[in-house]
Length: 72
Image 1: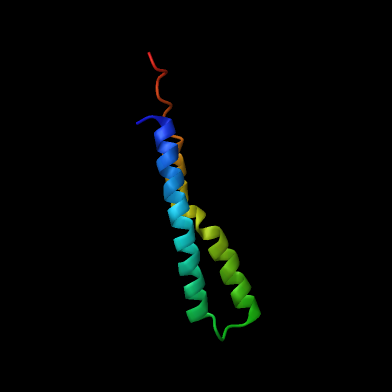
Image 2: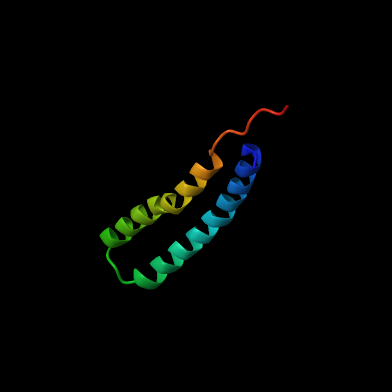
């Protein structure tokens, strides 16, 4: 698969994943942290705000995969 195609597929996957992740993270916070203190909420949102990178990194590596040979 050409790199350009990988980047298109990966970009669409990221655009689909991030809004879903935000909705799930917000729902978890709403359910679990309703009565929590300010420190717990801030800590949760800092961790949740950075954690989306972990599942996306393999996709980004795949998108940047081996360069396709130049067209003949």
